[in-house]
Length: 298
Image 1 (tube, rainbow, N blue to C red):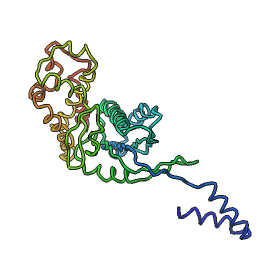
Image 2 (image 1 turned 90 degrees about the vertical axis):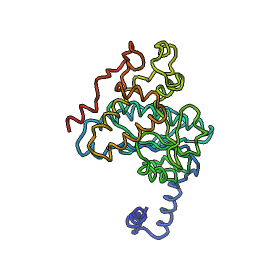
Image 3 (image 1 turned 120 degrees about the vertical axis):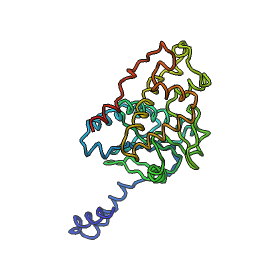
Image 4 (image 1 turned 180 degrees about the vertical axis):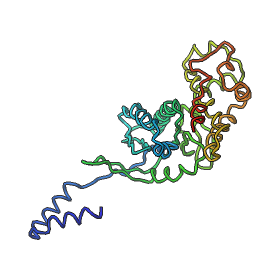
């Protein structure tokens, strides 16, 4: 914003003053930027450990962007997506739907990202708020700013662990997923929905009747959820870096507190599918721990 007027004056200074006035007025009228000042349901996503991946030239970087590019959120006509480096912003374009509609979709799209990234043991931190955010698709670039971005960017570093956090003032707008209190400002969204549903529907009692898993899609991601717990349990038990290890411990403890009866059994049996039922093997090899392979290569 500082250099543009100087460059214009330098290029036009040979014109007569009247021509200069006309040229500048024309430029101003043709390039008037109009922002819509609007409160939006706003999701801020940051990939954890991205700097180290770049410096180590990790092959995961290309995988991350491939995952970004395949997210369903880009197909939603009511949502706008901005991607820069390892950060994703998602927000509603208009306010023609109730807030819970947008919040539900923001959580679902983050959940999709969570599962896709967890396949390569990459994790992220997402924050949902409702706040002022201005966005304009200009001729040559996207211009955006606002309190929602400043707030989420500032709060991200203060939230322990990883996963999805939502301003607790939006708790009534969360109609599909379970949340637990995290701190004075935020609740934590329990993304392992199949696992939570199974715990609630069985009152935490194991083993289960295997027919439960096939009669409905309520638990269709239980194998992915158990794989997730196996991976973060391994990280929290074997990582040498306390700062990073504590992130996994925090998430692990959130689920342990929410589902204590399941954890009594699963911790003793390594989160193996057989804990659900002795005849259940699941669809994911329970003895392949990616975290173990990665840490052994460091």
